[in-house]
Image (tube, rainbow, N blue to C red):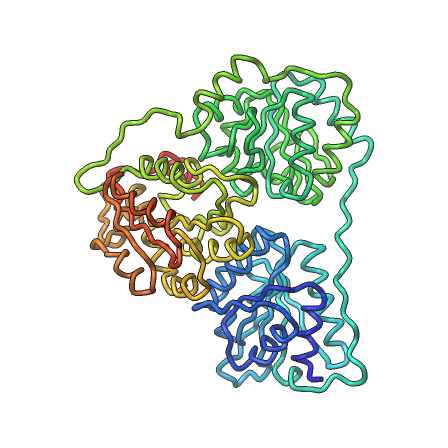
Length: 545
């Protein structure tokens, strides 16, 4: 058996069941070996989209996917998606053919490229060790939660594996990190003394059982519950949930978080976005961070206590150490306020729809009512993105995939595709701006080819809205970031979509009709949104630039 086939078959036997990519000569045999061994391969129309699909699939499906790309330009095309995955600590395996001859047009320093974006390069160095090295790359990706590049030199791929091909088995599960007794006691003491505690759960709280463990501990101490954007939906249905902490918060949520005397971040970086550049941390507020990676502790906030430990294990042990039950912030007045105005859609606003344009708040509230509750949403980057994050509800922490660690425009459609394949039981929704929609338009073909019953919602303001609203008030010329109106509905129909242009709420009747029908083709909603003002969170976001 040749190395390419042996490696491909071994990775599938070890648990890789989903592969995304664009196939060229260098990764042809490897990819075919993986599909022959039972993996599903999804061909994207661009490697950047394939990388983001693999990232989103892994995040939502909790199963490591692989990305297969050609040497050189196949890898560079995928670079933005790989960077997003690396910054998000997504355990992802990138399989790239490699040219080792410097005179080849395909030759680049692939190791240096990966190190530059935070991924970990590894390599097949011999036919004898090929399978073992491939399995080690997968183990490292899983156990260290890193995006790993496995270089497969072309000459080695074609060699025969000497002797019997080693049997491949899935790597053992990563062992949860136990907190120390001293840390458990210290956190239990801080919670017992707190009168206004708030929990903020992040990516590290998305593991099985973590949400239940945190809800039980919060009930014991009267804590309110919030999440970072990437854990949105974790506490869905809990009456004491504040939703997302930070720029997407409702005014009431921000007020309550800022009033806390103790904030505990659970698997959450508590970064400038989640804590609004520190404005949600009161002058006398004690901050605690729980994370199984000790290097994450205190990276963004000054801590009263840093606990190295798995979120679920730590929450359960602190709960077991609790003595009695506290009211905390769970008062009748706060319960009434949360029921009345806990969600941003409950906050009154002036509807600015008119002149052939729809207010994005009005659009998104209407879509929230129309679309089935069981949904999975992929969100792109741009001025618009606060609307789907703040106004669309999600059923749980797997109801939204938020690929924003690199803040790149153009990842939203591919994000929704990967999430849709990971959760075929839910209606997939892509929320895009017109800039991101056009950047990723090639993969409209992928949506149609896969038969995904997806709703693609484009918040179309004829430009890069973030730049328009950031620089426009200063009197700067905007011709570089504004564009003529584009008929995105016609574009989508060319790819085989059903499509509707929305200028008024009445136009959304076409969405209801599509939902009631066979959904045999995906639907694109080209929503011509008002563009006379920036989103409420935009000024806050630009402070980080």
